[in-house]
Image: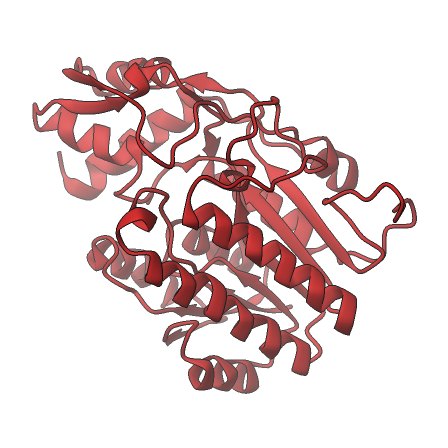
Length: 335
């Protein structure tokens, strides 16, 4: 297939592009390589993709409608995976406009480009953040997600609503994927595992919010990519079991689906740090702090819908995933 992957120089996007190329797909990567975190890491990810047969690249933003439409017209993708977004919960408190520009305006441009070009299937990244103030665990795609606690979460919920509208009005098949705390080699420097590793190796204290008591459904990047590919290959149709008198947010009479992709094995942050200490062979000096605004105490994915429809659910334990990250980090930064 010809697959357009936005955010291809990003953490998940670069891993996904590699997998698609390995199975023989043609991939057009689309990314603006912005400076939200070190662009050198994005360039290094991209450098691994550029020499590969079947890969081409456009450097531009989702907000740049002309550039996006030109990429669609030149490459003529059959399917699209939209992973480009302004990421990060805490940054959304500082720079809200970046989230509207990329995640709302940019996503509208994606939907319009797909609509007018007869794209077979649009898969897009949502987030576990949409569950917001929900406290019923595990989080299920059938649950209401009407109480976001950050603008980032609100923008991802908006993506799901926008996608449903296009599925309903124009018959565009769309699948939204709620990722749960993704980690692994080539990960993002603004996320806990990367920050902790860097500081522990430098002998600096690490900030541990909520005194380390909150739990996260840490999901290894290869498991996320497998989930993306399984759903990309399965174009949704109208849900024959959908009942308008008892509606579910997870499906529709339109060709629309939403899935969780998470390890469904929540781990307390203090345990995560302990595994990292074991892999590094060093102890962390912890600064125990209260929970930050926009954070939630616990996350846990109910992946029954994903398992039912694709036969897949993530399973990599943190002991394996964290070790692989540390091996990559030490080799990449030579520490």
